[in-house]
Image 1 (cartoon, rainbow, N blue to C red):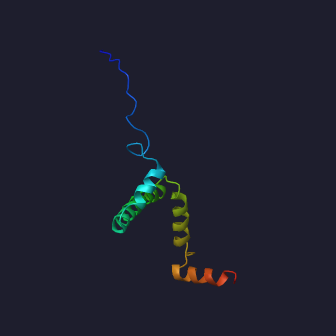
Image 2: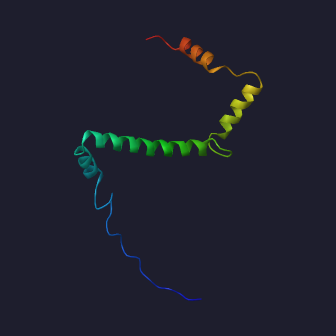
Length: 99
């Protein structure tokens, strides 16, 4: 078996691409035109939503953190103890303390 000895080189830059810090990114973003900031905001929102969606799927899949909760809800529904969403929401609103 042949063995290769080599040393990994350190990265050329650190941070957010070409030595950009969060503060530098913020400054660059404030220099964008309104339409460019809007486009960036939509992209960031999509990025976060996609990550959130993947986490939800993972959490509520078989063996996920929320799987037991879903099983309990399903048992309640099968046992006839489920309440329609609108009815439950109305009941919750009636039971909230008045301000």
